[in-house]
Image 1: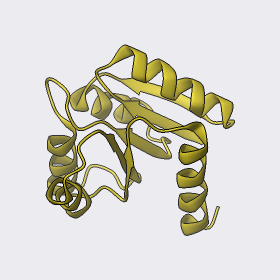
Image 2 (image 1 turned 60 degrees about the vertical axis):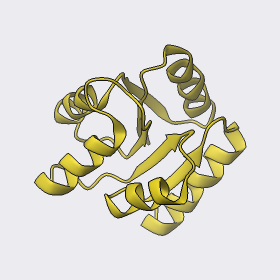
Image 3 (image 1 turned 90 degrees about the vertical axis):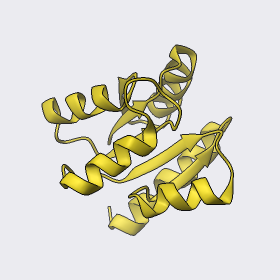
Image 4 (image 1 turned 90 degrees about the horizontal axis):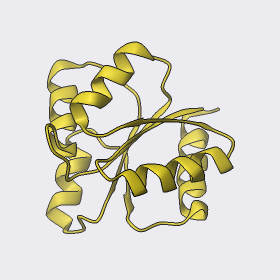
Length: 123
């Protein structure tokens, strides 16, 4: 599975990339939402996007809203963030995110979320 990690924090990109690799998947990275669209345009076989909320250039919610409005892709998106208010979680889910992972998280949490997605998709 190719997993695109979108976060403006280099340490988070590194840590989550290591988790993705440990789980046997291929990590791709982008430092903001616009860069993520660029990665997906070049590599349309991305299977999952792990998306931070707070980033420069294009934040996670803007990314979700643009994708939803323009129907750019149908790749599942997990929000991966410290934003934990029920209103923000609901806004992300209603804007196209399929799940929500609170930072910080462990490799076990990520593995469980990916397995649930694979079960849902029938992989």
